[in-house]
Figure 1: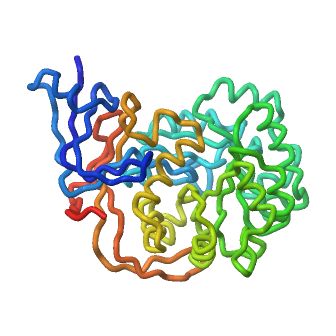
Figure 2 (figure 1 turned 60 degrees about the horizontal axis):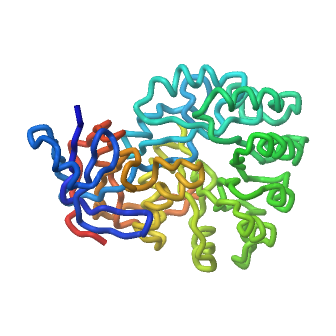
Length: 385
């Protein structure tokens, strides 16, 4: 039996062309379809969902979160920060490794309404034994192990390497060089966490290639991607030219309004927006993916830009052809949200507060054309930007 649904009268944000248009969206058997084709179905079996006053987008993707609940000190319930916050897909960024991914799959992936993908930590232990997982070279995943698990587990989309001094200890750049060998063999991207050196970015960036992702790209710590002048370090410019991608990765200590303002002033470059959300930063300072997006909106990025950053650009980063778009025939994951007019002060990771006057608020989340979550107290916005 055909399952037919029409989302009516929403402000539809198309990330493929950065447009907003009031229109209907058709869904047939869990996939986007022309409205006319849906209307040709048995009229008694067509469902209608009124989105008047709301924004309608392809499903939001959070590229960086930590959701290995109960097994790591960071882990948070994926649905609390997933479908309940308008996020249809969450990518866990290295909480699990070769030794414990099977537990992550059984306990988290298989029991979540939110779709869960993963960057596999290059340490076999992941974050299950603390946050200095790359201090012991003996814990690095072997090529044979990587080949085995990537062949079997389709939800693993890449590798995670955390390149901070507190993580690698005396090993410096060695873990990332090992990650490069793994990634080249697997033909998968590396998500690289950058923070306090060593190693320095001048060592890290030359190792990265097209498709790799630098998360925490806009932190406010010393030795970041921008010089004091606001110009990007030469190694960062070269990396961007090679096709390396920048990602926000807000986190507890990895997002700075000051850095973001400098970047925006000098560079018209796209990036992805992610939260690095986990148990201890859920309430403050991160909040949710929509709160993080609201901060970027208040810094002067447009609504279409911030939505594209968590849809098309995030999907492109992971080669997810079925997501991040309204193209006909693709999977009907959708985020329906309001843009609430209210004044609040939101903090970055440095403690700076920003006066924000428009806040994205989740209303409804659809997975393959079916409602996975609905906020009954959703606030409509009747004015498109």
